[in-house]
Image (tube, rainbow, N blue to C red; front, side, top):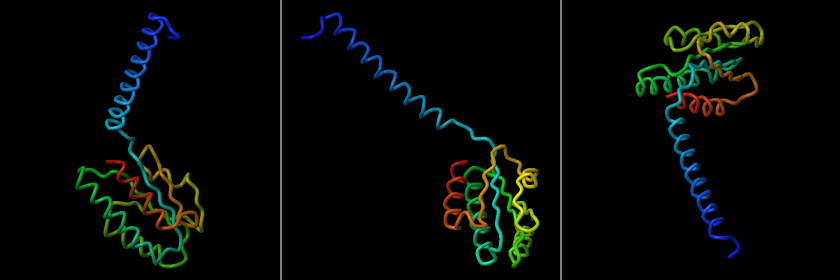
Length: 154
């Protein structure tokens, strides 16, 4: 044997102590993860010329918000829809839907101007998620990201 009895006892003791610390770290991670409270959030959706898809996306957000509201009893997130100078019927569709539902705030910006300084006063959350559907993100990606974001808030 390479180690003396005393050295063997010390090595085994340190191994048991290390194993105990790993178990404690895993346990505290699980407890902290389940008990963590996220700050209030705002979801900003910037869009332009989406008359064919906008009603579907707004109804999707409405359904997700209603589902989470039924589970938790509170709105999980503040939604701000920004029209960045649409030239088609997107703005009129959004105005009509804003009159029907009050779960989102509609903001219009002139001619594709995407200045966050003008959008921030409409956001009530401390954490702001910005989704740019004017060309950066596809509607399928938006649906996946928005569903994940809304479900992670409850």
